[in-house]
Figure: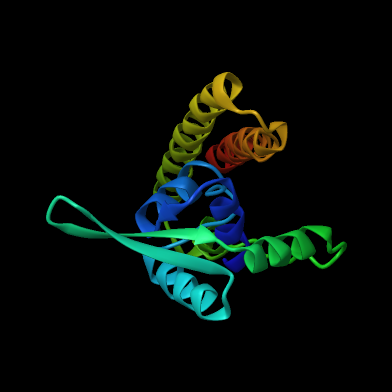
Length: 171
């Protein structure tokens, strides 16, 4: 979470709300974040001197905007330069449900797979829209590659689950 937030803040200062929104529409398909993880991480980064905050008012609300500091830029650059230390953790709850689905009637399994295929298609559609908007506005091509990865991943998952559905329906 730390480096994702530093990365987004290296693009521009943002509020916690804006950071959550950016994660959701950009790296959300492979790196999720909740407000419950964003705000504590921002507080810790501020204590470490990697970010600074500025309080302002927007209407009746207090708005806290975070910006990366020089120390934060150095930490982000050091992390980006690290090689071979990336975590790869895949948490795909649907697969755990599928693993134990032998306990369920075939009709329920079929409906679960069909619903999942629909959800995958919807998420893929969102990424296609995002990619189109990035095509028009993105000055950093590297920000497009994860989006393309997500599109390809959702397509693979749709195809794999469609084949699974065919096999389950045959049995």
